[in-house]
Image (tube, rainbow, N blue to C red; front, side, top):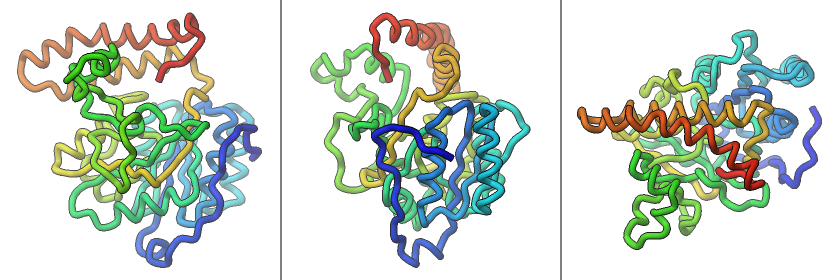
Length: 313
């Protein structure tokens, strides 16, 4: 498989301690759908990591060339498990399929347009190994220029925080900073630190924790399933951590799928998430009333990108 021509630092072999190598096995789960050239380099980075025992690729749909390349890879590398033939079942269901097929004690979920950087997996596994409660550890997700990506670490996403954050009021009005959802402008912590929500582009969980929360909610088709998973882990008394030293470069927006379709699913997912976590009649009614507004706003975003000539994350 050929890598893409991009200023990306691919993960080089990293020496993992015998403790980490032998104590718990690691499976990377990657859900693929019309990813494009980024898939090749992402897979190469995973297979270079000495801590990865298995890569489970769940192919929800690929071009003919990509599908052939994945089949050839699975045939020559016994670490690669390829799941095909189920169609485009969505990310959440695909990730659950991959997790059930994986043999590892620790599951690392990685987007197919994300590139593990040296030591990322080691840092994630070391941090999660002996936690006494359900735990998610998310990596530090970077743009290609190595700036921290929007959404890598976030606050609690509620209708109020989403509205304040999207409108910019949380940044403009003194005292409203607590409503800001995105934390990428905050000082980088020296060690893994609690964050209500981390990015689904790269994170890990112990298998027993993933099973304890019943994995991803398959009623989400694309987007917001990671937000929901973090929320459910916290509801069960668990902890969500952002790891500043577990770095991964995430391109984003590489899929050949229509941006309008992607944003539609994101809006539907967010609306559903607010309805799901609403408590009381008033909160539930508000969540239902906001649902069409959220979906329409999400669908309008790609049109705004075209008019302004820039992407919003």
